[in-house]
Length: 83
Image 1: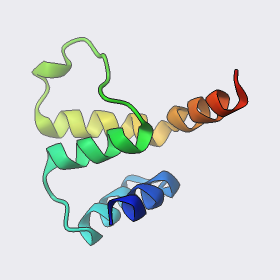
Image 2: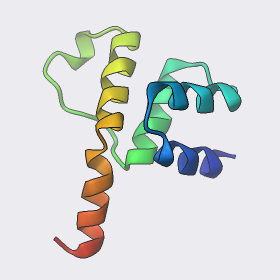
Image 3: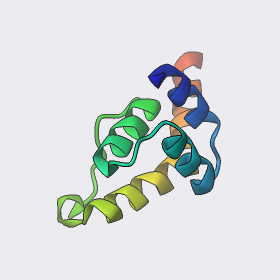
Image 4: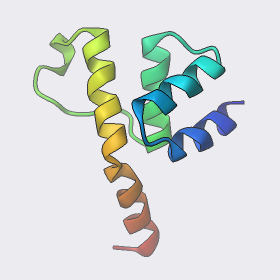
């Protein structure tokens, strides 16, 4: 199931799509959502000043915005190309 979710998330381009996928897979816990988003992007954490002072909801909003920017997809492509 998780592999299918990760593959589906990689195609998501809106918050609505991401939320639908989490709901469809019965994932409501914010920390679990964050864990899955990071796994999808192949990152363990983000460095942001004062990140730990944010509420869980703000952390989620922040990380979803990073996810939707899509730079992580470009980085994977560059790595595959050896750049």
